[in-house]
Image (cartoon, rainbow, N blue to C red):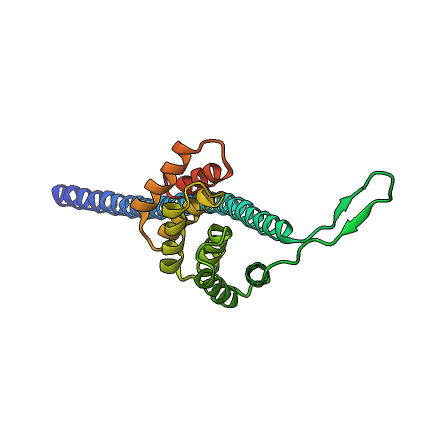
Length: 238
């Protein structure tokens, strides 16, 4: 009987220990699950923070690139306006003043502009007003009617700009090419080289555009066109 009671006591003690151990295991498992959830939450927070930081970095880089592009486009637009103003001013008549000895000064009217000059000035005026299609048509007629005009490089340049602003980059490229090839001593030579390179960018011809921009930065350092070309190269990743 004593032996039976002893065995019964041992069984009761074992069951108690087993129950206690089981409860402890369940408690540990619950704590592990809680820890896993917390680790997952923290990992998600870190990933979200990294993604936000990367998005902010990309946005800042894009903002800097847009600002550089805006500055370059603004400089180019100002240069075009200055060139248009210079050309128009050079065609305006001014009174020639002479002062004969012993007499009062007399003014003689300047010679009226020729018909071809009037046509050129009208076409440039259309361009400045944003009437690019009309300007292109007028400049095309001017060039056809006056193939030997001293204003031919200017007319070609504004014709190229009119095409460029209409996004007909193939025609613009051909027009700027003509200036570069046929009028290397013209004041429009370097601006035409720059716009030619920009046409290549618009057409997706990146290697050719990079080469064209580098020709300007290497061959004409310090010029406005070289500065714009360097900005273009930066935007292209060079």
